[in-house]
Image (cartoon, rainbow, N blue to C red; front, side, top):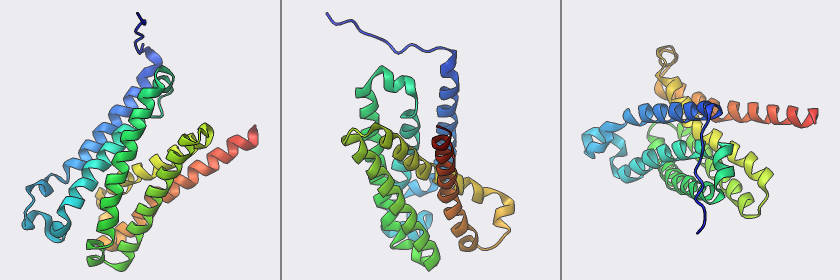
Length: 210
């Protein structure tokens, strides 16, 4: 009979656990703000009503990507079971495929009701989200583990950008800077571009030291 091994936790696992709890809580807060959309009425959804199913799938699957993606960076889980790591990875990939599809549909339809710049920004954002995740998946299939880790980080940075830009816009000072489209467009670019740039600088610095 094969001996069953269990995932043993110690004090070093407190920090990864706290990070996961923090991401879970922020994701819940972010999604909780969209609860009124679940009424599925024209009054609650406004201009999103014709694409209501794409909107709901985008929000729900996006939350799943945020929660499942962060677990993939826990080394102990990867070392404990590659099968579990792979299964969560497939879940993350599925969540992003669903959410990014909804995002792209919304970016090419309802977003134009706000402005062309708003729609274009979302189109670029969704495209980068899809492409970084696909490259992360492709490098895993090709067993290029080093590249896979790098592209998973890039993919998750773009995923977290939804939280960064969303919470940034909730700051009263930000809302006083201009209209919705005037403020959100630069915030959307900031949400993923600056974190990605920071990551590349740090990654290059580490490689130079080596």
